[in-house]
Image (cartoon, rainbow over all chains, first blue to last red; front, side, top):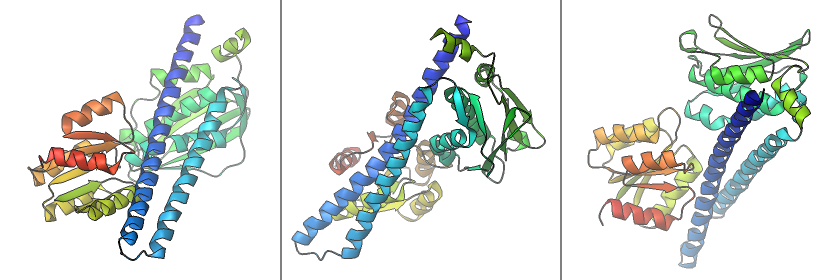
Length: 227
Length: 117
């Protein structure tokens, strides 16, 4: 049991590291845009002081650009805050839509670099009792796996449903010939911690995560009790 | 001096190009690798400033393709990452590697050093 809990902690730290890297990259891009826009603004003012006419439309556009980037940064920081709070309670009620949305936002850099859209399908609210942190970790790996095998449409759709005390998350839009090995050891381990079942439907180009509506008999709960 | 800036963040790359123009550089920009390759076939740029991470093709891959079109072109990489791994790749593959956000004076200094001017 101690070995399993140790592995869980190591995986958790690794996931936190990855998340921080992705978030800081996005924030640095935003800071670079703000820095260049304000630099340009300053130079236009200097030029106007030297006699060049300053165009109000240009100033308005640059100002709007900065406001837009501040809002973009604020949304990222809001997500970062939500993510940070996912370890407040080790096991609690989790809205699947929120957990998937958060991971889609987090992996935006990866999806953009692979030129693939991630789309969350509409569905009824689906709340389960599980570990939000490890669930997000598993969803993150599943998204990355599906991005690597995205089909010709370059769109991965994520849907979920809840029936008979079991929640199912489905990733579709994967090319059958590029689906690869799933789950790998890491995903298998996370699935064990969440009492989840992972499977592939190669012909449909789908990846499935099946979770109990209420987590029980997991090493996570042992850790929770030991606290 | 002709400079090609390539980054998928349009607002960043267009503002940077405009600031370089104000400072006397002939700066052109592209937000995709395809656009950058097309421009390099038409214009003989002295140096390209490339984002390391871009959709479809990385800056490293783009650099290799640009070199085939313009063998004398020099390169500088920019990135928001700043990981040790990125730094190693960036410094091995290009004259310089700059982490975003940066002061324009730093970029100009590196451009001049890369072109020995």
